[in-house]
Image (cartoon, rainbow, N blue to C red; front, side, top):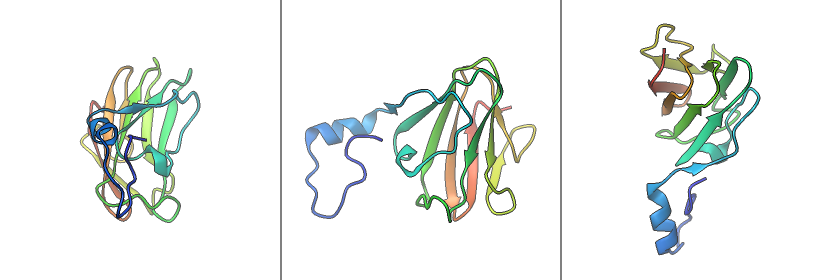
Length: 129
């Protein structure tokens, strides 16, 4: 999670917190299918590096209540594709310009931003197929 987030009313923004807003926090690469958690929002870069095809699965709002406007950024480091999809496809809507709108994929070294625009609606933009 980026330094300085989340903040609460009355918090003092230090220079270290402010400077942290311009860069990603890079976590440990995920070597299995992954469902993001609340701490993956803001400026966290989620690395995927599974040795076989992987799933990056966006949870329902009832499971993880990301605020509207949240962006989850994912980068595929592995040679196998990462599929971005919903945990519950009937509840969470994934929209993209990829060849399969409901489940876009990322090839090796490609990244995408998953942007929440409504309670259970996410747009996927970036280097997707």
